[in-house]
Length: 230
Image: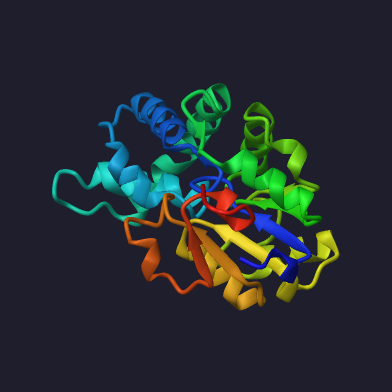
């Protein structure tokens, strides 16, 4: 990849830099116990991750309430949502990063991007209050000029607004700002914002193969964005 084509990079967090499925599973498991509801398997959670905590909680509630074969109504889900949200927030903050790990090559790739002179931001649909401590805890925060969570703007990815706002914060043109993510959310937002986009092959893409997503390229590791393959 010709990194000289870019002035900046916007990097997604969950499924791109950090494997947080363990954190999601633990926090959601504790939340469901609080609500007196049955557990949910990690493989189901993986398909629900990526569109923000609100979407995740409603998807989980829909799944567990529908295990008796009857789809729950929106009224049933909303009746539990406020309690679920408070419980999930509390438990996630308690365990943030404890069941998560940085993917191989991430620190090396970020360092290479920084050394190449690119300005960098982290843009995630994860709440900012979760994202910032996670980046610090995993030793990744220093690579980024700014971190924007899913609550930073009026809309979340796949809407292009967060990418456009992040480009403004970096002072770069979308056409020269590379989006690096793991899912169709990142790719759709980038396309609509006018940013080139590369996806990693190992993340969370709602249970669908990431190779089927419209993108400008795919990498097996963030180090492959800049450094030659070992």
